[in-house]
Length: 248
Image 1: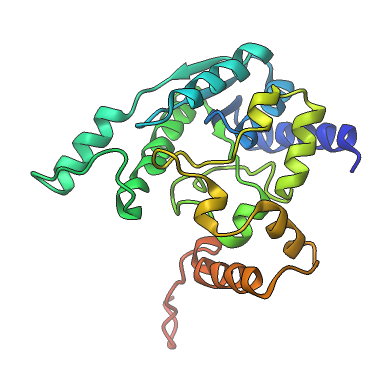
Image 2 (image 1 turned 45 degrees about the vertical axis):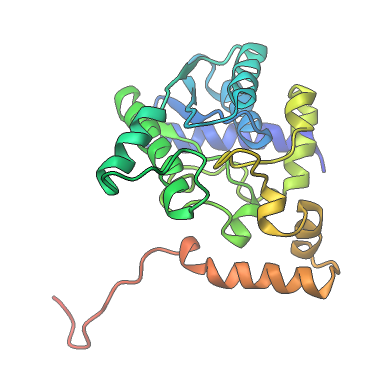
């Protein structure tokens, strides 16, 4: 992979997409992970000071905040920390009065509130600054629906959306993302100790191999294909009913 050309092409694409739509710059989430780090550096290259990284802890590990700030400081990326712990608590209280649910609760119905709150924060800043929301999803995650619907996939542009996880990692090395971010186990930060690979039941290496058309174990193939099937609704627009007699 020609990482220099890839980097230049993504930067040019981001500029074209944002400016042609009337945007002034870019806003993105800085989670402390490798995908958001790569997006942050690319946006900095594309828009200079007209970009903002938002670190949005919501019962998040302290290391995620540290790595988000490390990335921003290393590349001079303007950033802001927006704490969502109390907002999350109030949301749960409104949904389940008297509930004792906490931020570490592993119910997907609960933890999926977190990325949806972050989406709201991103779009608030985008509207206020006339920016576009830049997503951090990669091809591997998108292919199996490993994201929260109307949460981390609710974005305007996906610069990494056609790159496998391993290709994102190569780009991170080329961009000189701090090694502690590159080497950290991928996690959506939904609950304490959560990692992508533990939750998926296979490794990114196996997933990327499958998506490239390679051979994986029958068990892994079955898991991947089942996730693809169950998440198809996440990758398409909502179906629209069309009356047989028309509606004109």
